[in-house]
Length: 340
Ligand code: ADE
Ligand code: ZN
Image (cartoon, rainbow, N blue to C red; front, side, top):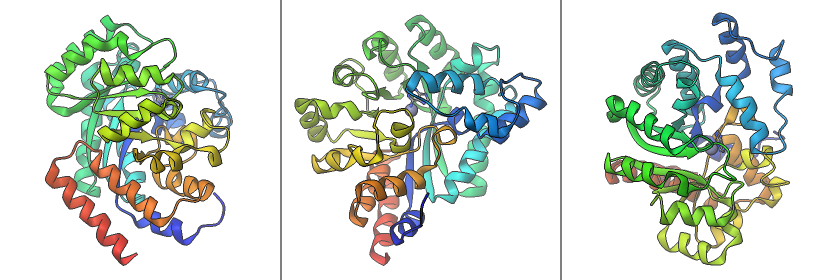
C-alpha cells in the first residue's frame, strides 16, 4: 500500500479478532509451490510469480476455480499444520488475539485426503499458535454449497468423532443458485449437535438469501452480507438484532463485489447501526491480511480512529468466545484506545 499513516500505526497495535478467514485461502504461493514439489502434485504454474499473476478475478467463481486447484497441494497432516501455523504467524504480527477460521473438508476428502488428516493437522497448528504465539482460535467446518445436501450430511457425519474440535459450521463456495434453503436440514442437525451457525450470504447473492439464512438456517453470524444494503427492511432487522456481519473489504474489491474501495458499504453500514467486523477472507489471494483490510478501507473511505476502534470491539463482541473472554479482550481495546 501507499504511505503509512498515524492511523495505520494505530491499527497495527490494535487488539482484534478475525472472524472470517478460510485457512485454504491463506496458502501463500511460495508454500503452494513448495508443497506441489514435495507432494508431487502438478499445478499449472511454473513459478511463484506465475501463481501471483493468475490472481486476477472477475467474480467469485473465477477465484474459486483457482482456489480449489491450489488446495490440491495439501496432502499430509504436516501440510495442514504448516498452513495453519503460517496463518497464525501473520495474524499474530497483525495483533490478532483470536481467530475463528473456516476450513472446507469436502475440498480435501473429495481428493481422497482423510477427514482426520485435515482436522488433526489444523488442530496441531491451532495448538502451536496458542502455545507459541498466544493467539486463541476456533475451527468452523464449512459446507460447500455447490455440492448436495446429502454430501453435507455425510460431511457432518464424518465430523462426529472430532466434534469437540469445532465451534461451528459455515456455508461457502458458489452462492448464486445455491440458496441457504438447500441446507436447512443439515444446519438444524448441526445446531442440535451444539454447533454455532454461520453462512456466507449476500456476497453475490440477493438480499433474499440473507433473509433465508436468518429465517431458515437460524444463523448466529452472517459472512459478508453486503447486498443486505439493497433491502431497507433487512437493514432495520440486522440493526435491531445486532447481527454480526463479517465483512471483507479487499475480497470485495478483488472479486468485483465493489468497483472501488471508495464505494465500500462499511461507512453506510456503520451509520445504519449494523454490527460490522473487518476480516481478510482469503488473504493470500486478495492481497492483504487483516490490518491491510483495516488500513486500505480506512484510507479509501476515510474511517475515523473511533470507527476503527469500534470495528475492533465488534470483532470480539461478534466472536463465539465466552462473555468473560469477550469482556477481557474488549477492555484491552479500550485501554489501547485510551492510550492511543
Ligand atoms: N470460499 C473461500 N472464500 C470464499 C468467498 N469469499 N465466498 C464464498 N466461498 C468462499
Ligand atoms: Zn469467505
